[in-house]
Image 1 (cartoon, helix red, strand yellow):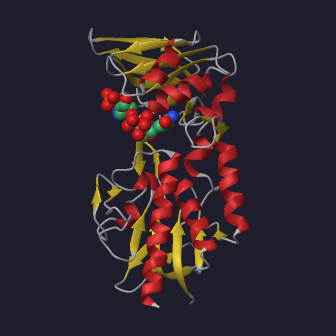
Image 2 (cartoon, helix red, strand yellow):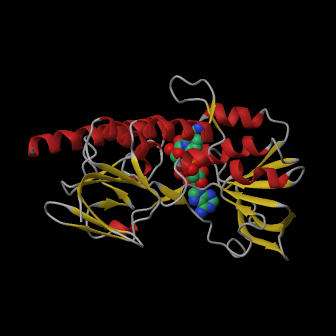
Length: 304
Ligand code: NDP
């Protein structure tokens, strides 16, 4: 079994940025990605804050990252890690078909959408319930939809959904938003968007697809039903770190790292949304990946 210098888990902004630096740096690096490369970029409609681009679509930026990595010959394999064993001097990664050994592991696997955990959510997933307006918005042309959540994702995706939907109602459990004020203003100025503050979704109902939701007004302590075609859930993300539990330090599922992106184990680094303290921005995740790749290359040089 070959020993890699560095294996990167995850092909989002963090993993691909690390891959660009590491492959250009000439080390023996491989990136493992279980789905399509791009990560959260593929779920983001419009990006207006990636330096150098006043506006770019998430998909297009993901393509640019990929092509850039390919230019330097990054070895990418489409496999997911099933098991990870961390040893003193190397790390083993088991996929469905292979076991890989590496001197250093960079974990850049990001996170998955958090679920509401209410009746009907799983039953109607793909039948009116979605976690990505950018991906599924086109299925809701001229339909009435709700967005659940009050952070940047909810507002951003709510605005994106108005390209297709007839009306988008943002349902938020509090009376004020966590989202950036500029996004709140954009949503308030969008004539297709309405707001239901102090509201919670208690149940998603329908027959073969969603046709109504049971809402709870937590200010007036009242429940009522609202007819609806689509329910989009944006209530944060859960880090994909289960595979590392008990092996390195985690806090609320996020990997604890130092300022060089090193985890509590010297052979494991983390970058992007998965690491504690991430600001969950494309540019910052890219920066994390770059930092980790450079640190790992320093370590490899020092080891000779
Ligand atoms: P956040 O964690 O920021 O917000 C989650 C929202 O969901 C909060 O309003 C929260 O409510 C609500 N919520 C959480 N759990 C529940 C629940 N069980 N039921 C109902 N509501 C719930 O997540 P986001 O995905 O919005 O953002 C994640 C990160 O990504 C942030 O750092 C954000 O800034 C960044 N981001 C940036 C973007 C940009 O710059 N354009 C775009 C998208 C994301 P409450 O407020 O009551 O806790």
